[in-house]
Image (cartoon, rainbow, N blue to C red; front, side, top):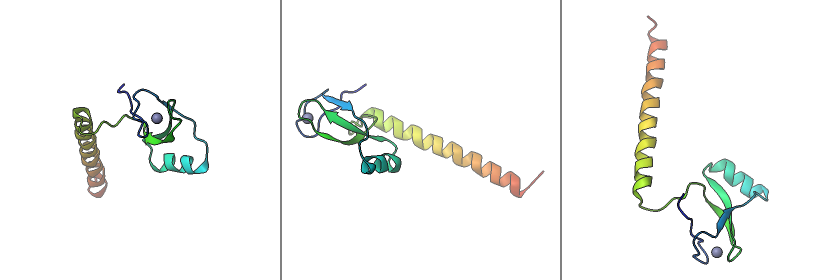
Length: 90
Ligand SMILES: [Zn+2]
């Protein structure tokens, strides 16, 4: 687990996952599945951040992106096969 940094006071390791408190945050979480409300114990900042600590320009992120695209390609190929089979039954 990579330590998150508070965007306001720049403390590291002071952010903890917080509960959703209002309709706007619930809406945001439904809209963007990877974000979650966090709270900083040092400056009391509260806001939405990526649930998976998104360290910019990290190699892990690049690897994850490649993995995501690979999965998408595999799913697309399988979907094509299903559509192809339904159009041309044996
Ligand atoms: Zn803070």
